[in-house]
Length: 275
Image (cartoon, rainbow, N blue to C red; front, side):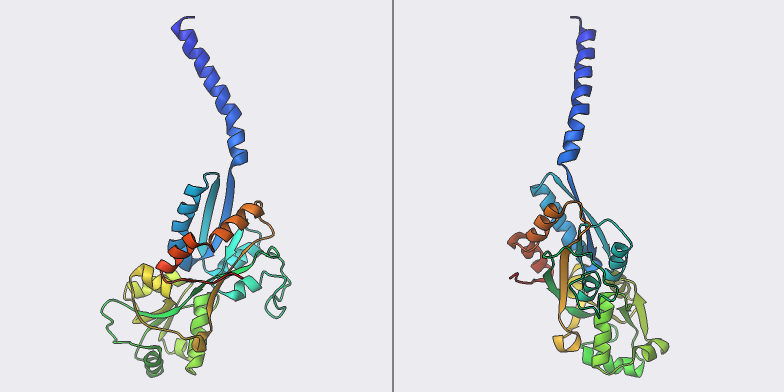
């Protein structure tokens, strides 16, 4: 057999093997779509890379936004295997087992038995570099807001960090509408927008999560107590519409393990012990 015929034969064999193997590879590949609160962007991206390296057949697609926006996308039919919210409210609104006063539409998206409390975070008062207004605590901030001498960024009412901030304002007997009308408040559609405003010094201070302050290198002046705004718990669950529920559960379980917990702890999250 001459050289040309040999090359042609080898090429034909290579193409045949490629055609044969491609469907097999696709069948063995598992894609997981994870919707997660924007405050998890850095840590979950890091953990995705770790998990994919240890599990070559799994590909994780991450989508980050405010928990309220993600909840709406899920409700409207967006494909999602795992939902991790920065607040219980958004998860409860999708969970048939939740109190009907919260799940007012009787939505049933959460796979029974998969829901866990994954992480705890802290609500932090942060300031731009140099802290021009000399803000040192939530108590001092409350007085400055009353006096109209400070400009603060917070999440809007659809965002868990905004809801926690509303509780803090109520704790100090401050009327949010009055403050907004007085021009001392500005809003972000997710916690990253609030962080960006503080980082850019376009505001005097902002209320974000401790983990976002860490990631952005912002100075934390104070953290809210549970009395001010309650515990900041991140629930997580596999969704009923998942095309790969077993693989999704395996990844969610891995997120509660030692390797993932070490990454979460390094940026300020507190893993919640699982029962």
